[in-house]
Length: 52
Image 1: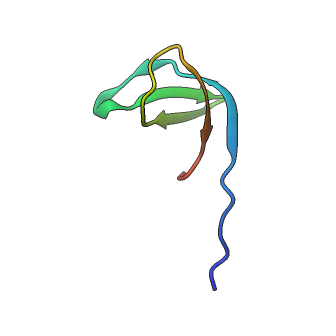
Image 2: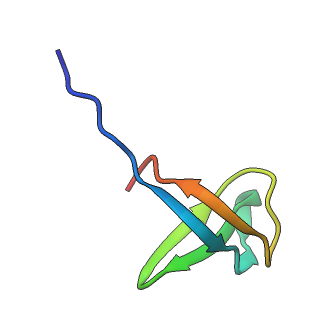
């Protein structure tokens, strides 16, 4: 049986801008996050990383 991965939840992430494909962009340190869903630039959200 395969062990399930626990994906981290990042709190208080600020969405920086909208990009192509209906996604938004955020940075955590030097890491770039592409966020899907009902978000807009300048929103502050909690996100769960599901893929690297």
